Length: 559
Image (cartoon, rainbow, N blue to C red; front, side, top):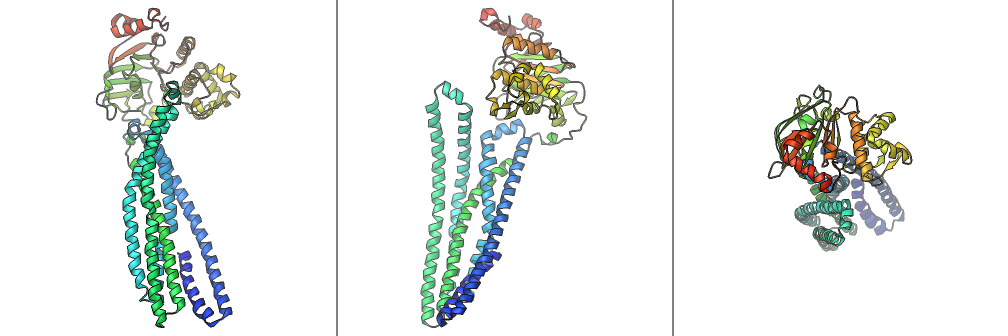
């Protein structure tokens, strides 16, 4: 406001220089008023820099807080919620969309007060100079605002489409980078390139369309304002010719129109940026407004006594269906497992083995039935307490950029080096870690790309073991291990004291043979359970799997 006020005085000072200083040939008057102009410019610049600094600081702080809030909210969502939203759109909304809202807030704070104030102030000052000629302003300004609102209405939906298409482009890029090895192995580079070009082309054309429409706003406002300037000069010239106005007053009115022109050009750019920012803000708000399906339980008191008993898991007639799926993935699963037991889970591909074990830490909620851990329904207890009791190694071993020590401390934040080495020993990873340069300080690359598949799996197992869990879930976590390492690892797990309740998902019967009980799944149903010998005698599907893995079947896994 102060910056704008000082700017509005400038045309009046210029008018006085023309009418009195130049008109009377008074050099000292010209110099004194020139000094005032310099002072107005200097003070205005100080306020402008101050305003810009705090606008930038506020916008950056806003974006930082919003990004933090969005990331925190996403962390509170269940796996079902995340599956429904999609990873690529979350990445876009956390980065590109929030950046656009940051730019919008910055320009809004900087210009939304200043520009309208100067426009309105210039009109008021124009009436102060000459009321009749100032009528030109009354006609010009509303016309300009109609143009601005029209363009805002046209471009807002377009920018939403642009951001939605950016989601598709991000997904395409993410999949191409993540599956680079597969793409090259099957020589699909040209096809992937073509698909990317198509996505990129659509995104480009949408941006171009939105940009072309937005770019028309500046020339249209310039035409209207310049026509207004011509009208002022025409009316002003007649007033000067009639002795009603002075030349300085005409120049002052032209300067006020020029100020309005500059501010409206800025305002037009602000509207474009605001339109983009509002479209992005809506997309961020859509995610923030999603109510976590497990919100009440996720925020339950972590000091609760729930899940404090001896490790025990009960599936009571559990069925599960993924969101938007047409059929159940699991149907009427019913079994119980107690402390110290090792439960093997086997079956064909896609029968629901991983889904079953993901219900234990409540990554998903059962559609029907109850999952009970330590006598407590998982839907009724505090999720942090439940997961603190569980050590899980998912199907795909995920390691993070950092040291081996930092990766294992994901399992237990305050784990000592002694506890880490013990977990590595059980996981059969101690030897190769000691051989790495730096040992526990060896730097793991993003995604663990500088480690083999077997090494990543063993580190993931050690990460689960370091927290000494009551329940240990190994979801096909030994698939990359050779038979000797697999056997050594199973033997080490049996020697843990006290032994955790262990769920062992595997395709290899040799891995499950010594389990206390093996669950056989087929098409989402629990068709049989028992020891290796019992299942060989009673379950045709188990015998079929066993036969396919014996020496006659060309595989020695079960030998």
